[in-house]
Length: 312
Image (cartoon, rainbow, N blue to C red; front, side, top):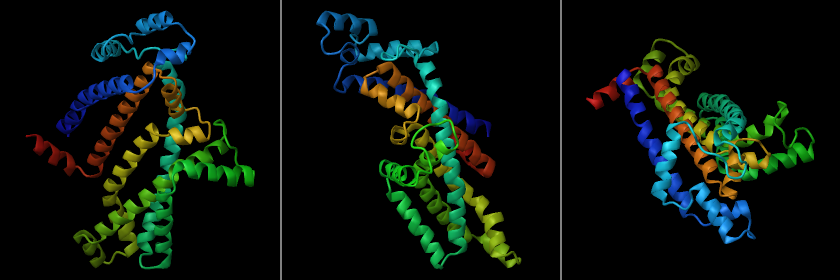
């Protein structure tokens, strides 16, 4: 298991270096100029050149990349060009909001999706199961940018039950969580039911049934546990997606998270802030992937043995 963990950690550094290189390069080749965003169109050419030299934007991409790596090695993510604050402090201010939103969305989707998947298998062949699959299909098909405004129209403007924006009260979380979690509920429901169906055809299931265990007992105590590896895979991937890609939802509900911060940084060509956020997103994604691999080993210790044999 130790070798397996070390192998997973070894891929972290080259992944992050490649991510930094791609971010620095892509930001420099896209149209627009951060200096114009800061000084405006009426600034003189001399003023723009002075600021460009001060920010290091007059250097080549490779030189900027090496300089950024040097600063990064000392824990310095740079200063925001627009906010005039350190990038790390801005990330700390906004990260908790995004983390809460992603956590509650994934928790809602996990419990509802797994429950719906189990019921779909338990009711297989009945109309109730078909209804669950039909609702799952609708959940996957509806995009966030359409579902969010629809929920606002119904529950906020129409019924006046829930607030449109805010983040301090429990009621403020309902609409954003529903918006972000609905598609994930559908995906988890589909994955859970397919994994359960596959494990129900396994030999150990037939043996359990032959020993006199009921279908429901076999489904909940044996089959569901062996299906959790597939479920955890989709949950971990989607959690990373929600954590790093809540741009639309945070914009709709005016949520003070990293998603809205990245949009502001991109709009203003704030290179250090965009680089810091992208690097932080990559770091979070890698950590979630590593945590998922460790959960795999906990659910099925044979996984680490197989991986270690591949190494040697």
